[in-house]
Amino acid sequence: MDLVNLSTLQLRRPNLCGIFTLPSTNMHGKNLTLKPLVVSARANTRKESPKIRNRRMQKKFNGTSTKPRLSVFCSDKQLYAMLVDDQNKKCLFYGSTLQKSIRQNPHFSTIDAAKRVGEELIKTCSDLNIHEISVYDCNGLARGERMQAFEIAICSYGFLPR
Image 1 (cartoon, helix red, strand yellow):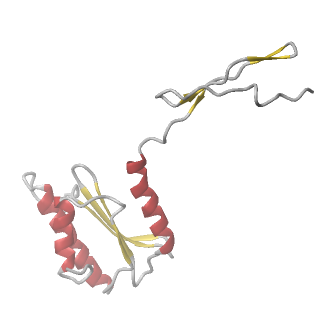
Image 2 (spheres, one colour; image 1 turned 90 degrees about the vertical axis):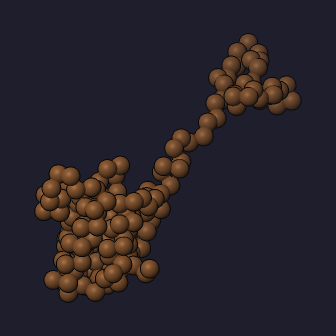
Image 3 (cartoon, one colour; image 1 turned 180 degrees about the horizontal axis):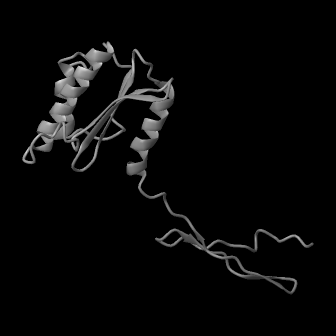
């Protein structure tokens, strides 16, 4: 096999799109053509990074039956909260703003329902004799009005610093 002289291969200047091309050369009767190399960035890095950070945090902090992990997820319209015992793989409490016991009448706002989810969480913790949580896991999501109403309700019990 013949060696290709690298001085004969010349790179053209890159285009604005980031496409690099090599000119086709003739190596002793063999045509060498290379396809263009397209370099692009990974999409949605801002959406992926909170999830990645949250998974990394879940590896470090695990809940027990006396100090469970409080996991809260807030969608566009609803709030979901869970007390999780990771060692025994059990959910000690689950509450959401969709439950009929929390949302008493249909004209109950989701912010008021989120506050009631926090109050139900406090009642369950007092029944289970839980005075402390290992970590507050908000799934890497930003705080909104429902999340703030929920946090105000559980701050009164001493789970979160004010």
